[in-house]
Length: 294
Image (cartoon, rainbow, N blue to C red):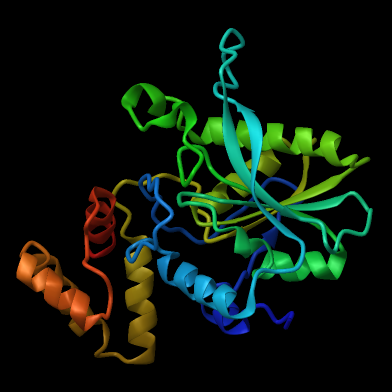
């Protein structure tokens, strides 16, 4: 199997021009923080939707990476900050120790605001580096995404346990238990992430420096902003650099399509035009569409 690991995808989507956070993290690209998506379906409007579909297609053709163990489960605390609350839930993770060199070096890819795609363990920048440095690799699914649904529902009473603070504590507890389970002595954990998960990676190094040796974050927003226009300004600037007359027609096209999405017939036409399934069948997709096409 080729170890280039989707070089074409790396070049376009996975160009991890990252900082290695050995001290207080500093992250310099910003994107939107996305809403909950509790299903493993491909999402056209999620920023990683296209990459995910390319990865799944590649895996179908070439198979998963050697040694991948997927759909593993870990008993996680529901509330890390209320000692009297002893409830637990099952948190999904994946791992690969095929290249592990018994050096107590572990890489962890944090799955952010989407269902965990375990093949990112091998077919990614982290996977390439793991082979190079002979690290054990792990990926942890974020609570309330994918198959990891505490209390089995998304009711408001359950969602009060959905927060970045709880997610960070999840990762800390996971690392602690994996150290015990795999006998890591004086381990060096390096956490990876992009977008929201990149923020988690940076915050892990800042909040839990005794557990995390370093963090690698890509396009990681550190300041939540409900109406963030900076990303679109940078995209427009990039388009204008390539072709000065490019940005305005694209902006007009999105405006026309945004209006047309309210019409069922036009939605079907767009789906046929872009060779996809029917668009916006889920409430989360409507939020994604209008959140990314302003």
